[in-house]
Length: 588
Image 1 (cartoon, rainbow, N blue to C red):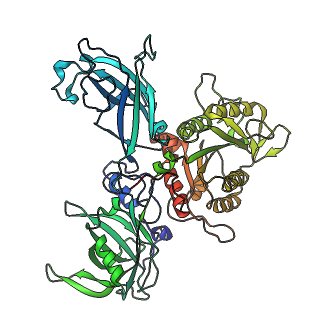
Image 2: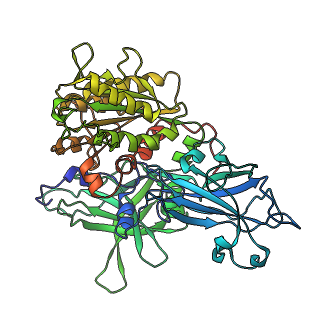
Image 3: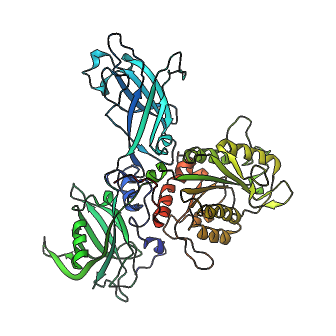
């Protein structure tokens, strides 16, 4: 094969049918949230068009009770308008319900559609109006709201709705000045439902026989690429298998494809077999077109399908001896991230803060730990707030674990995992505000020391996550490590991460300051190469996400967005691998 020093091992990994996709997507990849595998091919397709595929489409249903009656001869004719409050405080209208005549207890039929992003806090604002009779035949989209009577408003965060088992939340309506006023303005109930076409997925094992040899001094290194035929006549890649080296009769690891990926069982799929080349110029061994229903028939009949190659004769194809077999075809139901969260599964937040001397003296303004009297957050505070504000909605008791590492603690010894609140026994604090207070207090009582060691913090988090398995399978732990430095215990850290990959735990690492974080990036297996321990054990899954704060803010997004986009996928990979299902699964 070619002579190239690029990431060969990463390029030979399977894509799109093994790792689980976090939150689904629109069209391809499924508006239904998490049903298919994480799909780099589909992500690339969307991002090339300036779109983001990683979200779940949500529909909001609204109803109200005991609204104010603003009409003299009849009851109010209410309509609801839903807004998203953006980062600058401005309201972006998402949609309007229909007008319901003469009702103080309306249940609107018109749904409001929006994209649910786990990694951001989405503030929703609801306004209710009494529509004047003379506008009843005017389309609601064209109504001027200033001409209608205001009945009240309410607000919440989308996460507050989707984490409820009922996926509904009842809010008290109030005036625009945030006061309920002298009389009750009624209530508004909001229900969220995932727009899921189907949770059906197919686990499939492909095998080939008598593949053509494209190499001169060895055998071909084959892999399959599967694409879905779209209405425009082209095809969209949905997954590829791993590469099997030096083999003309390969059998690949199972692929798991959602109905959102393959469309329907009758939708044509193009299956191409290539000989891998490190240069990227993969040689086509053969191709064929089959639907998922056709592949099921091949499995049941234990038959093979012949590959073809374009012929020199225009419009003709050459039928090859090479064949594709389906050794396994198994339909199953896959639940989404929201299915788990709304049935009572929780994310438990942990934080570990770097107290090594390289951060500088906290009393000096150039220190990364400097607390600005003006109230402006330093990078540590910023990371805690941005991530904590998102995750807090997914933990019912909001008691969070807070540690420090690399500091000289209250008893004069250097510790690489100490309780941030100074307590010898309790490491939990109340809410994100509790973490911030414990951090500020520790800066007065803990001296900066070193070196930078992650191993003890990761092992402590793994111990807590592992202990929970004996009594609770519905809790998943998220450890946020904020650091400014280069690891001194890289191998110990890798060993700890490999051990922790079997546990309900994800680790988010934020790099602050101007250090070289190349070493940290190796811990994040985004390029398909899983971590390997000193004993040769390979990590079960990727549980690390690393981002340097300077790069995140340069890109105009929050640390939470950059860190948390992979978390739902890591959560699902863990749950599905252990066949852990939601407590009250939503029917397909």
